[in-house]
Structure formats: structure tokens, C-alpha cells
Image (cartoon, rainbow, N blue to C red):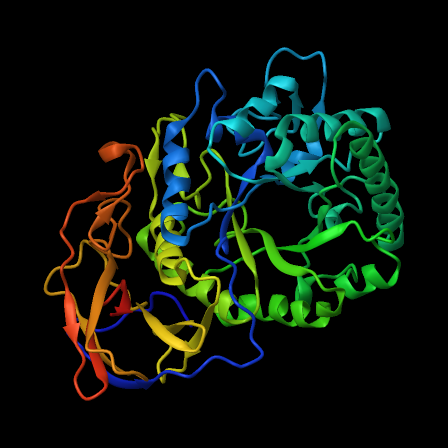
Length: 485
């Protein structure tokens, strides 16, 4: 699984592929598998407020509901949540203080009651709201922030999150001697305070937390923090965690198997806790991405492969992290730094995954083993029935390349008695393209209809099944979704 490797122009392959059946013990993929994380400091930019709602992200999020039958969950958090202080008397919704103009994130965020208007502009979305664990000046301020969240967000509040990536706390938020046990004791203390305050102010049961929201770097991590050790030390002694959340710090978008292996292993290792295992903050390359790598069509292809590999191996939800002017963002929500609202290539990868998973509550994903590492394929099952196939051709083709676009032909052996197959392609002029991306002939660009689907190329491509096989030609740097009808 290596993304976008070069290939000599004009070369072609033809492969026959058998599609494995899902493991009988595998669990269904939740319909909200494709979800989002929005940087706390920039949430008002994404959502707007009651007087000026941002309809563009609202439209983009509704597209997932139309494909899966449920809305994506939205986490509001990130690094800036541990630099965010709530002030009940602040009239402005948010104040951002930067160390240096042009930085990706502010060093301090002050927010007031008006901030919470943004939770009511995007439709019937459910949210995971981030609380500041770093702030130690006043426990009352933490209590007030939690109470305001529960009273303002109401039934849309899915879970709280207390702290972001606290394995980086030693030397950053706390002394260099700050230990796992120190973290466990602090989180247990503050989470109990949040629970008590919320239960007194808000009717109904306490929603709980997504936790521990650590970014464990596994083989390169030198401070010894592990998920198992944290729980062995008594983390979450009151059982307030409802969903496990870990973050993935990807330093290269190349080897997907290698990138996800520690997460898959960790999910199995702490499965006895009985919680969903999610990636609460994830995207393609750490540091908010890179221009020319994570804002181009090649990243959409990576997104499809990464997401389906995760789904096939027990990860229950991905929160793709977003932020204003971030190089890996799925869309730019407002005009900033000379760039207006726009839908970016990674969004199309997420939409393709949502279309592949569909609206069944019994969806399972299997990887289809291939001989080459530049094409990846997946079978999508509803129950025991194969219903869809996804294939991603990672061979690089740039939009400036002259000559014909190379392609490869693949033959999939089907299980049932299907006669026809619907074809939906995700394609752009090249892997380095920023614009003119479509999935199934549909554009979600801001300039067309503010993120609503617009058919720009009528999609009528159908294939006949011949002797139990379907054959498909896949151009380099493109992906295809085959739906059995």
C-alpha cells in the first residue's frame, strides 16, 4: 500500500482477483465512520453563528447524511482547546491571540457564551466538545465551561473530551517530571468535577467522555506512555469514558499498513474495556499538512485507501481534522489569507468512502489481497452479501503529463448471480490536481452550488457480468466504486 508511485507511460496490467468473505467475528462498520474534528479556535469560522450561519459546511456535512443515512459526528477540539479559557461575561464569541501573525494556531483563545451559537447552525449534527485540561488557575472556570456546553448544546452533545494529546504534557503544559500517574490522577480529579457540575446543571444522564485522546508515537515514543499502562494505573476510575479516542500523527502518507498497524494492535489490546475504538484526530501528514502533497487529488486517493483499511481492521470511526488554512483540510470555510471558500480534493475521498459504506447497519469491509502495491481493492458486504467493490489505482499521473493516461484492467470474481454493475469513478486531471475533481460525475465545489452535489458529467457507465466476473479498466491516479445491481 504505497501511494502514487511512478510508472512508465503506456504500461498496462491485467489481474484476476478473488474477493475474500468477511470474518464471521468481525463487527459492522458504524454509519458515522467518516466523521470530523474541527480545531477549537476555528469552529466559528466553520459554523458561523445564528445571525450569519455558514451554509457551505452545512451542505457538505449533509452530503454524508444523504449517502449513509446518518450525520457525521463533529469533534470540536485540538491543540487550541488546551489554550482556550471560557469567560461568562465576554461579549465576543471568540478572541484569538497569536504569538506571530500568520501562525497556524493561536497561543491563547478566549471564548464567551456566544461561541455556543455555532453549535446550532449546521443542522442535526451531534458534537464532541473539548474542555481545557491545561488551565489550572480556576477549577470554577472548568466547571462553568462544561456547564455552559451542556446547557447550550443540549441533546446535540454526544460526549465531552478533557484534554488533547496529554502525553506531550511533560515539559509543555507541566514540568518535565510529569508522569503517567500524575496524568491519571489529574484527569480523574478534573473529570469527576466536570461530571458533578454537569449533573447539577443539566437534566438527564451525564454524556461521558471520549478519552484518553493521546497521540502515542509507538516505536519513536521515548517517554514510555502506553494505553495499557495508563489504564493499569487507574485511569478513569469512575468509568466515565464511553468511547476510546487516540490520535494518529502521520509523518508520511506512503505506507498505510505501517501507519495503522500500531492503532490496530492497540485496539485489540484494550478491547476488553468494551468501548468503541476511534481515531479522534487524524489526517494525512502532521503539522496541518503540506502544500502540493495534502491539498491535491493524490491525497483523496490516500484518504480512500487509508479509511477502508482502517474500517477493515476494527477502527470504528475516523475524525478527519480540519482547521482554517490547514494544508490537509477537506474544505476552506471562509475567505482567509487570500483563499476563498472552496471544496478541496480530500473531501472527495471521504465522500467516496461514505458512498462505499452506504446506509446499511450491517456493513463489513474486507481487503482484497493483490500482488502489486500500487493498486488496492476492498470488498464491501452487507451482512454476508457482497454489494460493492472499491479499487484505487495509486500509480502517479500528473495533469501536466503529455500523452495518453495509462490504465490497468482488473477482473473481479463475484460470489452471486449479479448481471450488471454500476460504475462510479473518482477522478481528476492528475494526482497533483487541485481542481476539477469529481466522484460519480458529481462536483461538490463551492463555486457551483455551495457544496451541494452538482452533476457535471452524467454517469451512465454500467458493466455486464461475464461468467461470474466483472472487468474494469482503471486509469492511473484514479479510483472506482463498483455497485452490484
